[in-house]
Image (cartoon, rainbow, N blue to C red):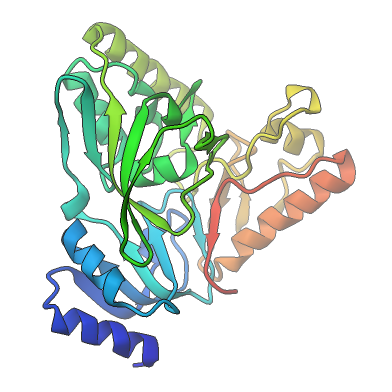
Length: 307
């Protein structure tokens, strides 16, 4: 057990935490690519209060990383140093009152969408097409098919990496394209959304349309992680996949890593040798698109840990 592990182990034991924790824990199953390195300290807190206690007690020099469902991350072979947190059942509540929908950060986006359908709440249909969780959706302003998280967001209850509890309220400056501009070093714990009643038949039809579009245009039942690169601004409105196609890179392969035949912005991983190969594949694509078309692509997938 190294120094960081000893410090956290003492905190866990002293405070009799009910959450689960492990040391040098392999994270492969927490990435949709099915491969990845180890967490130095892996922790699933039982409640917000317990998480706040642990964060307050830990030393500032211990890094904190939060992972969700793993649908848009590469976990490098060298693993993630410090404390890796995954929010579980203690953050899975969903409820609503007259004006607000409340959702814990670990609630799956599609579960929230279904809940809203069952309660005739409109505006959450797009979440049925996002394979992530509420916390991640707020962290990256997740969206698809013309809607984004910012469209329904009111505020989020968050903890800093040092355990300070804050509320982050909506503002025009808070979100940009696939990004939350003010969430660095904060952990989303609970989110409040605008509630608007709609016709359940219309809501259901929209969810069916999104499901059909997703099935027809995106790979299914393979090791992938959603959109690889953000759509760049300008360039005649071209999307990332169109630029990859234009550069002649749709069929590019690297040792078991390639693009989906359905969508040239979805990486498919068929190897178990190295998570770093997936990053190398993407970096090669970025370099070639820039060289051939003069366009700098930006990762939408989050890359975590050490090489």
